Structure formats: structure tokens, C-alpha cells
Amino acid sequence: MTSSAIEVSGLRKAFGDKIVLDGIDLDVRAGTVFSLLGPNGAGKTTTVNVLTTLMKADGGTARVAGHDIATETKAVRAAVGVTGQFAAVDELLTGQENLRLMADLKRMGSGEGRRVVTELLERFDLVESAQKSVSTYSGGMRRKLDLAMTLVGKPRIIFLDEPTTGLDPRSRRTMWDIVRELVADGVTIFLTTQYLEEADQLADRIAVLHQGRLVAQGTPDELKRQVPGSHVRLRFTDVAELDAAARVLTDATRDDEALALRVPGDGGTRSLRALLDRLDEYSISAEELSVHTPDLDDVFLALTGRTHTTEVVAK
Picture 1 (tube, rainbow, N blue to C red):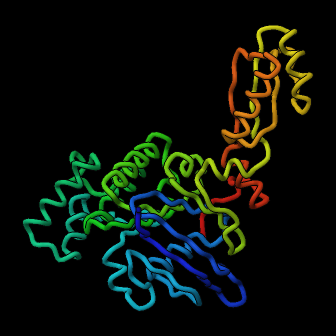
Picture 2 (cartoon, helix red, strand yellow):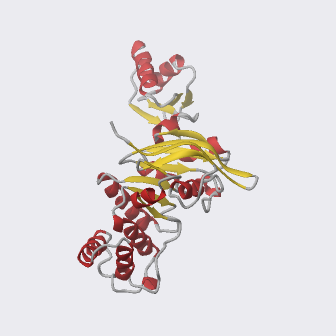
Picture 3 (cartoon, rainbow, N blue to C red):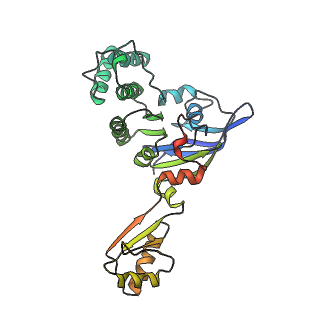
């Protein structure tokens, strides 16, 4: 059974009279991608800051890599890596010098430091630009270097807070590939993002944070099935078959031009099997069948009352 990399119970945090985290519970399994979504100001970055010991919680408990965040801060910091919303790189140094600086801060020997720096430059395709000042790097290159610096100490848990904000689609997908490679190596990723497609592509589990509380948790598919709008689309070869199916499936919406029916459902296999059994009972065959479920945009809107496009910077 997969162990927990992060365990959170009743976590609370307030700034003055504003409650940012109102008793949240999380369980992030080791070797997976966990994504925390929420509107601007929902408390995502605060959650990351608390779990990485950059900020103290007001209540509740949390263990990261098996260590209590309140009493074992050094052990927590040794086990995690953090890549924030903005690339934490020194523009006056070269890419190689930035990585070497991190190796020195980790107190690596000169030989081990050189080896790690070389490996990371190769892994992140930064060899050709290694001797260039970071001030000349593109946004995508800076984000790659930032993540490479996070990996110098080989953390088993990495917090990625808005890692692809501002990147072009190609650079974003490169970062996705890197995240998948890390997880394949057994690394646990705690991801906050404003791109719902990113969470859909990468996350094994997603939690939605709204007004300081977790309003939903589950796999992307589980969350989509919670939102009304799932349906099965049946297309028929002729009007006679369409008419027959419409008489049987009285709750379906008819599209005569496409010779199709839209049948409400929950996106699950049980309801789909029941639908097919009902068609078979009346000897009705569909030419095509497709299952449609809401996307994460629909989930986000239903759970928070707003579209994800309102979010610019996570707090």
C-alpha cells in the first residue's frame, strides 16, 4: 500500500480577522501528483508556505515526509524542495553558477557538486546556455533552471506553486514532461496551478479550496462526475432507429439533423451498462456511442461560483 507523503488534519491559519485556512484535511500519497485548486485568495500559497515551514499554522497538525511541521522543521526542510510562483534565480550569475551555488548551500563536496550540476544541466536541456548570464534566459529557461535548482538536494517531495504561470504552451508542456519524469522516479509533487488543463493532465488527485475550506477532493474524473452535465451521445443510422430509441429513452434530448440522442447520465460504467441493456431489450442498436463529462472548468464553476479565469495570482 502506498504511504502518505503529506498528512494534514484540521489545519488553520488566519491573518488578523481574516480566516485563510479553516480546518483543512489532506492526504497526499507518495509518488503521486496532488493538485490544489482554488480562486484567487483561496489560501493555496498559504497552504504551501505552512507545509514547507515558511509560515506557522494557527491550529491543526501536519506531517511532511513523516515529520511534524511544528516540531521537526529542519527535517521537513531537508526532505522537501520548493519552486515558487516566480523563478528564484540570480540574474547576475550564469545558469551553471546558480546550480553550483545551490550545491554549495547543500554542502556538497566539489566532486559531487560538479557531477550533480552537470547532470541537471543535461536533464533540463540547459547545457548550451550554462555559461550565459541568466538575465539572457527566456521565461521557460528560467523556470527550468529554477526547478533544476530545487532538485540539487534530491528532495522526495516537491512543492510547485504556479510553476508554469506566464509560460508559452510549448514551455508549459516541457514542464509537464519534467513533472511526469520526476513522479516516475518516485518523487511526490504538490502542485498549485491556475491552469485547469494542467491539473487535469498531471494530477492523480485534486482538492478544491474555497473560502478557506476544501469543498471537494478526488481524482479528476471523480470530480467531473459530481457536476451535472454528464451524458451519453447515441447516433443512429436512420430516422426509424432514432424514433424507436426516443420512445424508449424518454429523458433524452433529440437532435434530428445529426440523428442523435443525448441521454443524461453520471459518466459511470453502471449507468452506461443499464442504458445499453435497455436498448438491447428493445433490439435497438446505435451506430456510434460516446460518453461526455464536464471538464474541470465546469467543476471549478460549480464548486466556487466563478470561472478559473478570475485567478491571476494564487494566495
